[in-house]
Length: 303
Image 1: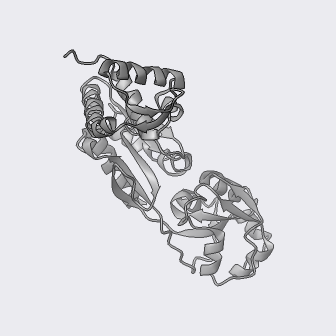
Image 2: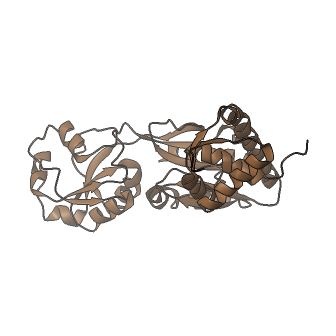
Image 3: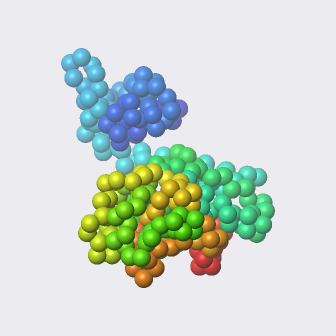
């Protein structure tokens, strides 16, 4: 039997089955839903059997047939092996690019001020930053390594804890000169700056949680300035717009430079979330990945 030449059709089928949608699969593959449907039909014609159950109008319900469901694990394993083989070919080429995924705020406040030291140690490796708050597909987007903030559990990825952190209020020196903050209860009369960058995460520290730790009950946490970027939160505080609830890793350099001042240091509030180095397990032996991971861990220990 002649083997199929339609590798794209296999990818279209696998993505459609995984998402149970031609439209979502099309978005992942960067083609139109019509193109995905046509690829799937081409594969069905070659096999001589349907892969999805269809209603009387012929429209795919995107429920896989029994035989398709049985074949999917092998197809996914084969596509993963093929992607890894192509990646190894790319690794063996002259390309010295290391693609790193981090959040925009982590890039601005922690990574970029330090990245020159890695590039000095590894001059033949060009770092390409992918800055996004959204989850990325390490295979499809050719991501080598990343830093993520959370509880340390991301399916399909190996993790090494990089840094833990505290959460505490900060403000600018100029702002503090014109406001009286002798105790946390004094925050009731001040503008609070809220970090919404991971507001949907149930464990993400909030003003409400910090005030509870400080035994303060009469401060409204509904008001104030709300920003969905941790770097911008610190910038707003440094420019005198109010008191921000800062994450210590992000605020470290601003505190050292005097741009920000930590308030009420006697109140300790460790965050349940932490920073982790993440990468695909099957790629853990890549020299440039190992070099960047070890450099990140060394930098974190020196903070």
